[in-house]
Image (cartoon, rainbow, N blue to C red; front, side, top):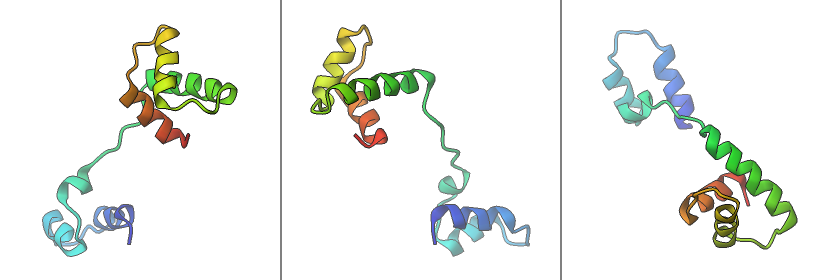
Length: 91
C-alpha cells in the first residue's frame, strides 16, 4: 500500500485510536503523516522553461553545460540545482 493511501486511511478514520497508534499500525512515521509537500518556486519554474527551450536546441547538453549556459544568460545557477531541475523534468 502506498504512503499516500496509508496517510489517507489515517486522516479519514475518526475512531478512538490516536494518530500515533494508527501510524504505528500502518508502518508510517508521524512526520510522514504530517508532511505537506511544497511545489516548485516561481524562479525554478522559470528556469525549467529556459532549460526546456535550450534542451530542444541542444539535446546533448548535460547539467554542466546547461548550468554554464544559464549563467551566461544572467542566472546565478549552479550545477547541482540545474541537475536537480533536469532530473525533475526527465532530461
